[in-house]
Length: 247
Image 1 (cartoon, rainbow, N blue to C red):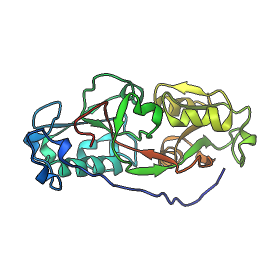
Image 2: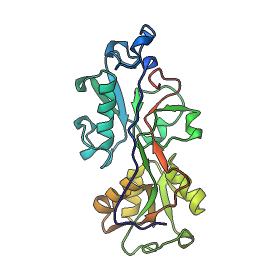
Image 3: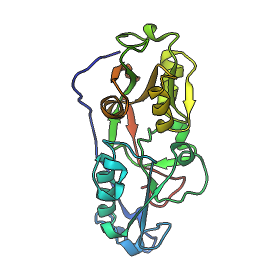
Image 4: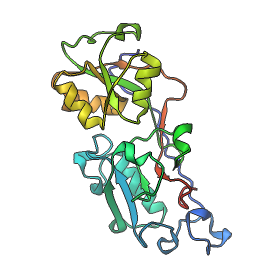
């Protein structure tokens, strides 16, 4: 694992919106221009419905208020809306759990963003945009825990680690660390367990880890960053499978 005082994360905001995001009545000559709101195949006419988690954590959303546009994902959401020709007043926010969003079936949103890693397995059930952020996984703990000061994967054997259901954080515990994780319905439940010292550590993406260790968890600390398995976790907007907005 890598212990860091600073944070440098590669990030890409590389959305490409074209003709197929709009209705079939559009001319191919307009492919390079932003869409017209009336032409978008949204679930509610003239409205872009965006989903996030509950709660939505800093630094992704500030003060759990995505409608403010404050925080990285809240800002990305409104930037996408602008590209689609949707003014801020026509953006509607809804909340979902992480796990229900990645399941197949009808959605109550046009797109959802709450640090969804793009994976081939998930692509079988939902669509993704191009990636807008790349981040590694990290372990949050507290001073005095059995994993404080550990510096290798081998040192984590026997530790009680948790992660939210359906996340790549959960996969990391199973596949990289090789232990059986404690599974939580969401990060909030995992944080509660960590505060109550029911687990030794919680695995989350690194930006979230900085927030949890610095604000949410008393005497919190980041044990370390898990080794990259390639390009890192790439986050994308999540859409229903076959959504006309995807491209």
